[in-house]
Image 1: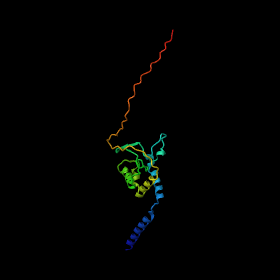
Image 2: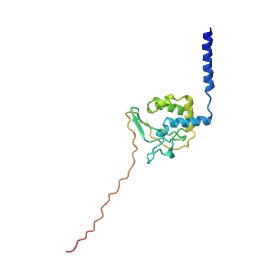
Image 3: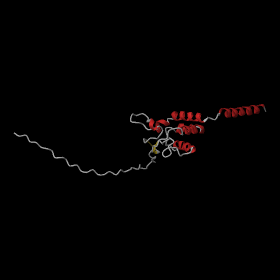
Image 4: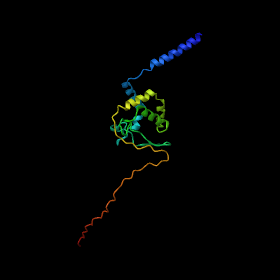
Length: 177
């Protein structure tokens, strides 16, 4: 009987400590945690285009990249994670953004970072979204992902044929002897 009471007491203490230690984060704490997680998971490196100097272009911070990542999944492009309504996550619900993050890892589109994503708690994912919502919206259209075997669509530009250039007659001067 004593053994049952001790085991029951231990279970109750563990439950109590688990509930007591899981303090709900304030909105500001969630944003700070999201910022930390974005940096820790390497999201900045892929979702911010690289400038001509070889460094991240912070004028387009988290606006996606036209650099494709090729693998068995096809070619994927880092999405615009700013809250822009047309090209970013502005019109997506928090749940949509969280599902996008999870699906990128599950579908193998983010193979290098899937280990990070799968370890994130629901509160971590909500913190990431809270932070992304604080970013400056940047309109940045990113190419659509390409599935294996698909050929990328090439936009043909209509080019007017150039008029033939007739060479100017060379002035010939003959030296007198």
